Length: 238
Image (cartoon, helix red, strand yellow):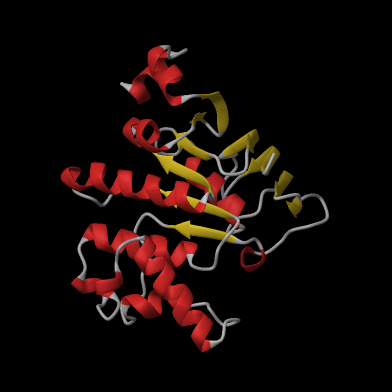
């Protein structure tokens, strides 16, 4: 397995109840997994734990055979090789598209930085936007810039937190298809958090259902739709 999360327990500071409760999850290299659940079920917390933005008080996390977290090790976010697209995209408003994407390219020479910038802008089809600022972009364009910034450093894993929630309904189908195309082209292991079953059906290889910080279903998206095992799952997929 490429990603392993074993017996993860986590609660936010000041809380007495675990938001993640003895959760275990494994993901293959190149696989796209959609995590679906109600608000507060812990799905976004899983991404934050993988990225190293939060630390579980118990459990084991491994990515590409490298330990991220165990009883003795806690690897910080900058050493995990993870790209993340946040729900609000988190673009720097005072930077152009090009500078947003290349932010953090401190280890690359200028020529290499320009080459990689051109590669990712062409991949997500935003070359004409290089000199614009975030406020000059549509929601769909901002999302593609955030995606380009996330994949530019060539991360091991791509994490997407509700990436379509700020888009108009008319744009969602088009953007989903483009995202799926990009993920498959670069063959990156991807975890997508959502509350919309259409995201899983259109993009994911697997669908993981979360309830109260626990995995209650893990299967192919169409299988879950056709035979939901509980009323909770039925409420999410219909």
